[in-house]
Length: 534
Image (cartoon, rainbow, N blue to C red; front, side):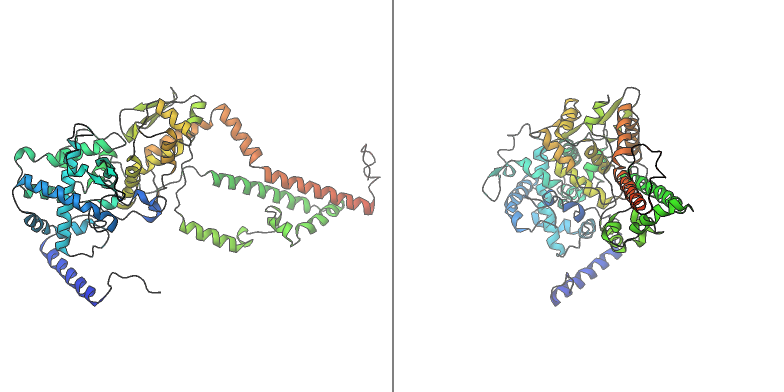
């Protein structure tokens, strides 16, 4: 089977050679130090909800600019570009394209996917989409109310069915990982037009206002405007303002793996039982040997009943791996294809409130998560959720997974919220405590957002959040009520298989004893036991 290729014909090969040659020539002259920052959303994340990662109204940048279903927005983008050109009155549009062509290699370096388009075409895309972004961001961040954009062309957007759309409907598209335009391109556009000194801070200040309006969490304060222009793109800026810088740890560790504990308990019980049986059957006592002999014959039967009983079938086996190698191979293959990331094992909000914990909002961001054991209070940052929040949070998680090699702090935060919010009741409790500001229709929608968040494609160990989870679990399970429940679960619920097998063992023991007595006679041996009738 032939693999797909970017080269469809000989002309494509010649174009590729020319493009590579041009890149090599220019890289000899200039040192490009631009990290890759614009990726395709990982399939492991986008498979769960593709519409959260692919723009549905406006395509920005080379990944989605020429998609047919988005090309209807081209008229609105050109109108915005034309309006800015008239306002600047400095250079013509073609001259702007020529200036942006100087940044071709830097622009290409930002995108992870190979851009199979000519440099001049790429410059046109950057010019059109860059002017549209600048225009839209300025109008959105400087409007006084929702109707302030009614006279602009960006406010008159229509979908395929002819329905008029508000400008807010494209905000989600602007924050998607695949739909980013480098900030240095926007900065270059404004510098080319020679804005007055009072306008030098227009771009960073407007970008900061936009992030503040869209961020679900509290942003950093007192961030220098010069630092804004150093960020890769709008999504990177939002992540930088939302997530603190933490020290990187070399190893990821798994904190809570309840299934492993259960398996260890079962394995230990089986081992003890097998040892007892081996000792019992090895006794050199005539009466005992006559009882254990028929039982041993039953155990050693190769039939389905004996093979399906996990304890009995393992009594004569030294190596567990030798029982069913086909099943082990299937499990191994499944483990290789599944991300080794377990959902956080943490009590829900309702469970924690039931044992006396109180939830309190903090005025800080993600770093303000903490637990006060003396007052039994859990402090969480305020999160504001609206129609854009799910798309923004999912793309922040995707950006961390693709672009960052450090601690995935925002991803770990979403996993924590996913762990403590199970139902609409949990959302209601947090909303009443003003930890969740809900602009959606119902509390159930908020629960669905967090419970629907995809697991990370790699380990998300964040020291202070993990320590918080560890302390919450430790104190939760140390309360008398929960200890009693855990004791029942550990020694009764988890042992039902073992108890069933022990009962079956004694049943077979009695059957064997009855068979023995029917052959040899037991009236004399059990004459002293009242009520016994062989």
